[in-house]
Length: 243
Image (tube, rainbow, N blue to C red; front, side):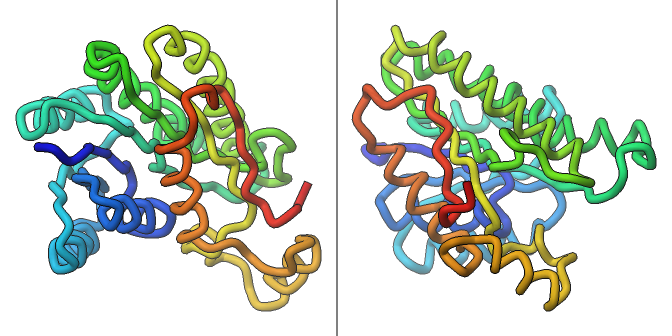
């Protein structure tokens, strides 16, 4: 029980998976979560345990408030509560806004934004009782500048940025820091729709000349978990200079 505890939502792949591995290696007990890819979550658990780390599976749909409550009851029973919450669960939708259905809009908003609200709401009481805690939200550069044909995704990430800054002010008196990582183009399955030509064209727009990696995002999340307490309410861009 001397280990610190972290929950990484959407941790079966991409940035979430990289965060889970990085925090486990750093000595955290990691609660890993996903809704669909249970086999990948089990594989992640085996990898963490095989490397000498510790973790607990808490599968479920964090965009559902009742499921989030149930997950946090399991976390409370197992480890008391969280020292770090990483709100990473997210989906994208590419297409014209005028062609988007009500269900598609709700799915993006619920998964990307509402899930963060539900998890924060459950995590905060324990953190307040301890007068310590870190909340790290995975956002996007499109949350500030917007992306054509990704209006819902951009809107959800703009919401994450607003939630981050407002909640940071609310929780600062309790010594809880809230920050967001605004990712640029990260080489994950979310960008799998791009063909070779589109990938090369996009790389030319990035001063660093390449896509970022999930491991780089995880490394930044780990730094934020141990950053000075005066660092809060920040939307930190991880974009290879793609301003």
